[in-house]
Amino acid sequence: MNAFVACALVCLTLPITLAVSGCSHKPNQFDMVCDSFTKLSKLNNLEKTNSAERYEWLMNNILKSMDQQSDAVIAWQSKVNATPDVRYEEFQTAAQSQGLIGWQCDSMQRLAYRVGI
Image (cartoon, rainbow, N blue to C red):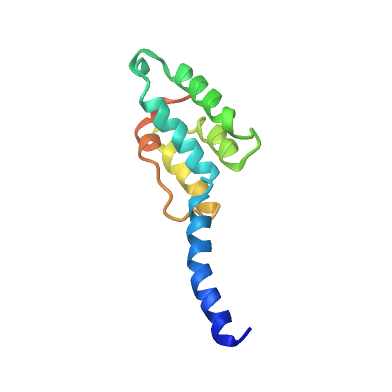
């Protein structure tokens, strides 16, 4: 195989490989916790529940898809005991310490202070 053919194959297959691998993106643990907050925010009876009930629902939802020993679960469980108004910022800092610079979650930012033990 000459160099031109080899180059052509690489030039044609590389974009396809990158596109396919991009489609199989697995969300990180912190995004999975965020997804649970988004689901919580959509509950019809959210306003009728107290902070401990929201925490229990959230943890049950998180643990359906995540290991209890994952970094994000441990981070949330440790932050839920923090002062309500700093829970989100502390969890965001934990995400950033895992290399997720600029990580944010709108639903968590809106609800973290209302979810606790």
